[in-house]
Amino acid sequence: MITRVITRVSLLFLIGSLIVIAAACGGESPAPPQSPAAEEGMPRRGGVLVLANRGDPPAAFDTMRTSSIALHHVGGALFGPGNLVRRCRENMYLVCPDLATDWIANPGYTEWTFTIRPGVTWHDREPFTAEDVQFWYALAANGWELDGESVRAPAYFRGDLGSIESVDVLPFDRVRVTLTEPNPHYLAVLANPRLRIAHPRHLFEPFLQSGEASVAPLDVGVVGAGPFRLDQYAPGSLIRVVRNEDYWERGEGGALPYLDGIDYVIMPNATSMDAAFRTGRIDGGARGEGHYLTQERRAAIEDQLGPDDVFYAEMQGGMFRLGFNVLREGPWQDARVRRAVSLWIDREAAIPTVLGGFGYISPTFSPANPFTSADFTTWQRFNRGALEDRREEAAALLREAGHADGFTMGYLCRARLTARCEFLHNQLSGLGIDLRIHLVDEAEWNRGRVSLDYDSQPGSNFTSPIPEGTEAAYGVYSRFPDAYAKHEDDHVTELYAALRATRAHRQRVAAWRELESYIVRERTYVVPIAGAVQVVPYRARVRGLAIPPEDGHTHTDFATVWLSG
Image (tube, rainbow, N blue to C red; front, side, top):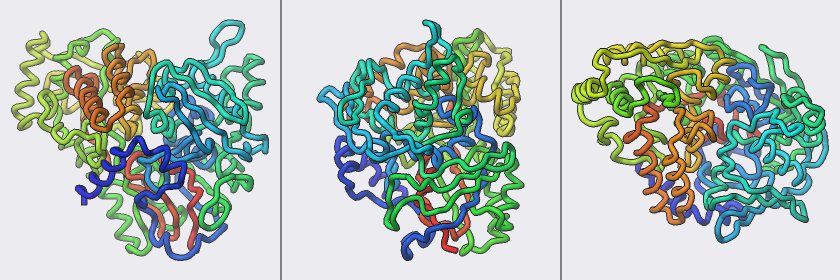
């Protein structure tokens, strides 16, 4: 089964140069996993889907400030599944039109021209225009200046947008994005669902011009262009969205969305969520680390509910890792020390201990991803040989670096993932490293992970399913403050530039594997430990749900979902 999946996905990447044509022309692609009986009859209109949400959306619903799934689980419904383009529902490894109907690149892939979809409106019924796109790009890439002084920081994902020379509005509601360097794979990067357009120019610009640079979507009513609009937000309790009657997209059953609305019940406690699901008070679980099911919790659901009453979305992703802040003084500035840490950790033990029994070992992507190196387990300085041999080499490296007696290192720890931090503390104590855990709430987590205040951290749990999109996780701090490790290694930037310049699939694979090996093995800026299989339960009456094979931020618009009864 795994062989068939890898072959199929690899083929899709081999025809990467045809992605634009296939998406724009509606070409067929393999069907994704869906909820049971999605093919039985036409979708039924109406009804309210009830889902758990891990917490209140942080940053006042501002998608430029956080990639937290507590926002993006709701953000897909409010702001849409992507931006100008999106990951196709039929196959997330292909790119489909979204707020742009089509696009064209110049021969050098430095100019991308998008035609904005006609008839799209914001939730307040103002038209969505090319000027909105230009405004969003400027705000995300540059922030905002007032009287020549920067008063609003760029989006945390500004580096994903590329090195932008200009964004110009053209006649016939078109937008031209000009890059300073070629990127043939720009569409796949832009399709990242975290890059949602949630900032209407007509609402945000007056605030910014008056000096209120911290204005966020919640301040203007959370006005998006997605399939649902905000009806009610009770912090700590409920987020209620209702059908956007003006939404542009159509499905086999007519205008989307099919549902009358979605109630997101805010449930920070995973145990309470499980109980609500078992008793039928919610139709589906929350997405997000700490709320994905463990083997034990899944077994409890199956003890109470039969196989005809429930199904599970299983998505690969959510890497458990350790990233070093090499811009902060400490022994970890020495690559030998970082390699020693990588060699010492028992990766296999992390899966049953802290990942709930659902997991895999991989340096970056899921095992099914065609860019995953088949021989990574034998990489020197990563995972070579028996654990005892690796640990012997790790101790020798630490002695060679002058730290035979060990040292103290801080670690930024998200409170909801305490078990992972304790696992690392216990693991590294055997190497003589005293890992001082800084346990923080969500507010400090979102602030601290983009700062230089901590010696090490786990990262933001996201790795794009395409190589070019990983620069947000592995790139230099000055351009990617949300990166797992904090470094200013210009060679990493050069390797990403070489990756983006590739044309043939074989060249792209080779460029990525050189880059990944440099980050993980040679320089060891990041220590990948294990990846989680993210499991979300849904009631069988939930139909038409597109389940991505990886990255739970994908397909959270729920526009195609309907209820059987």
